[in-house]
Length: 442
Image (cartoon, rainbow, N blue to C red; front, top):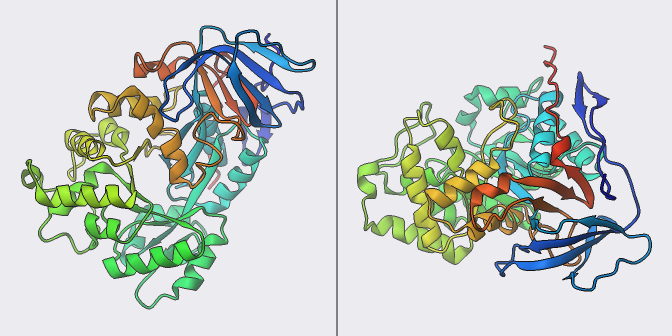
């Protein structure tokens, strides 16, 4: 076995059932990963035969490998001929719509061993999310780091049964992590309550007017919270969402509602279809929207995978989602990579995030380098952590992925995982075993 920190598998953790999971071993020694080609995530060309030195969970040096001699006590990992990219960030997951600790941990183990070192949770039961976030931060469980949202929406939205699951035991719309808001709401108090849940951001979901969305965004930013929103929150259309100053807009397909006339007054179930016939090029309304988003630095969380994996929805088909994501990309908008999946969605032993990257390349026209940036530095921007994660640079967290094959020659090679390094701890893909999920007791 190579001389690096590695997590032993199949240690039982009891929490509403048991799952097989890996608990990392604490080791204070430095490590040096020697010989790989490093793509640092900044857009620079790959550098061959490099050394990445880690110390206390952070990157201490990135230096040429020629004539490198490791100091005494440094663990040396030979990765000659391999390729290194920053740790991947899945910028759209749902870990706790229906809180099941065993299922959530099983999903998180899979993500970590698939190269994912951080996830952005886009609405769920924060009573579980806060617990998982703390355990992940201190590497008490094998998991990407977790950043989650508290939801705000109009009162009508909380008829959605998913909100009742996420507020189980309480009243959806009346809990700090899932609040119904109107023009009468005390927004400073509502945002403070949301912030008190440990949330990174407010997610504005639906049934919110443009003036109210602007007020929520202003107050959230004043209290140092990010704002994540659907690209249309009905009756606010995409241009009004962008103009409100939100940080991230989710779902490329929802950009299509910019041409709706009239736009639906509120989110409906099933949703009103995007008027595809109005999106033929050229389109002045869509062009103005994309220009505004680029100028404001708004990130688009494209979520192609969710449309690709189930193309049965009446609101928007996968082909349109990919087309709109591609147009946003060509307009210079930063895209982030998120899958919009949750525990139990798939029996795959691999994260869906590599599939999202492949869709972005093959169907939206991104280069492999830009696709990787969508899941690294752009993902870091969605959570406000670009100074700490998202690229391989001295001083940042030691979050990176070692691949057997070059992802720039074929984006599918992001699945050729040799090892994930998170907080300086190594998780070798060959040791991954899917966890056993225990049902939640009613």
